[in-house]
Image (tube, one colour):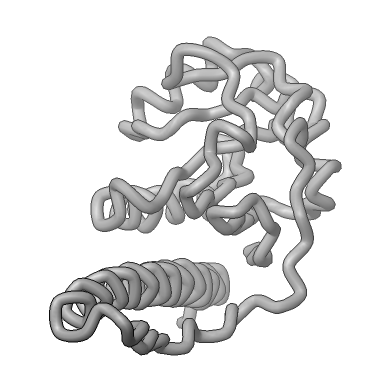
Length: 200
């Protein structure tokens, strides 16, 4: 018999991974084009100056591709405030600290099996894109015992989670993002804009 939860989980993971990989590819490609254009313009300007100091060097511009997420919404700098503690980090992290990186916010709770199924995919992305991507776990408790920081710390160690985790025991960050179910993955672009989310 087909396990509907597992099928749904696989679909969610594929969609989230495609979204992240697609955005990272676009961002890397557009920055590479811009850097190549700067190098080409500098090289051409130097060559033209040697050949004929009176003629200005022609500028060659490759169009930067259009952003695939035109309806982005800017995220408030303090949106991660309200947690009762941070784990796997030296202190509180703000959106300003994450500028320049693609951010995945993983809304999870350690008693949710589907939340635990997402962890290997997040670890894979963290290893594949260590300089471009930051994952932050937002532990939003479903039950009272899950609100305890030490219980979350034990779960982090048990599941070998290496990324920072905020204890969102009052579900303030959860509500700011309008999250409705576990797990939910939210993606934020390097400029601090909300790109989308996937629940399941």
